[in-house]
Length: 323
Ligand code: ADP
Image (tube, rainbow, N blue to C red; front, top):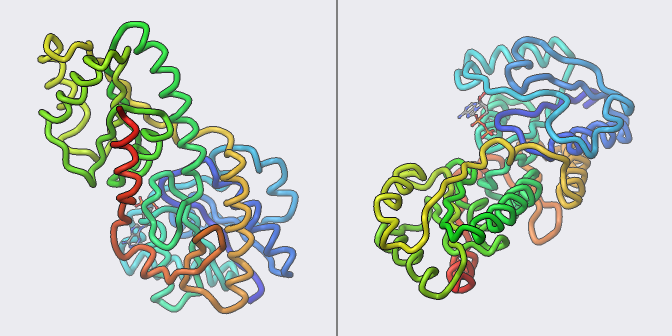
């Protein structure tokens, strides 16, 4: 193996730049050439590929976003698109690929590996929905952004005696909602993985009021059904009995931006540095993860095979802490 490629794909997160930097510098250290592929699989198909050196990743460790850009690429779902990708990799003399992205991007990486190309994956997603790693790159920074928002909303909620529904991202995973709910001291967390009825939600709000709380913070994962707006409408019609008046804040894309936290910089650097090393060792077809605080490899197939489960201990903790 002489020349590897690196790309960021799918949903962006705040830890991608330190990871690109680590892949490039570790590869150079190992005597490999590195090509940066712009806009994920889309740029791979279009041949948007540039040579990287130590300087091209200078000054980015603390910057959010991704200097390579990211994209969704519908063509890559089809064998024809992936064959084009192989052709492009061949044209640029790339003989190994590092894919940094979420569940979808890693599934794409697996497909490429199944076609015989040496690929290694790195989990980069604020959703934290990838198996084979305790945590993905970007989650910690996103959590800190959410906590900052929760703290501020609590200030205003307490001033006016309000109940707030705060919607967090996470696609079908409730991890961001649950973790930020625990760390932010929320009264209730609504995740797609845990069933809660509207009656129970009303009960929790009323209980918070009777307990003498000055606010009631409910974190709602974007994947929770029937959704934040439906719940808000239901609660608004019952404000008289709830005690609190109700407001909604959808945090949105602010969760994807910002300077990566210390934890994310370290995680991204550890995972990124491991990728070229493991490619050289012949461990293509795997994803780099962090398991019990050690870098660990999981076959890509297992990493994306099933929905990652929420820890039952965390769910219980959120329940215990709310009173
Ligand atoms: P994320 O990586 O953040 O989960 P997506 O699910 O949108 O984001 O996936 C990003 C890209 O990965 C898609 O646009 C597509 O190009 C590729 N991809 C996703 N799923 C598959 C799949 N099952 N087969 C092949 N490529 C896929």
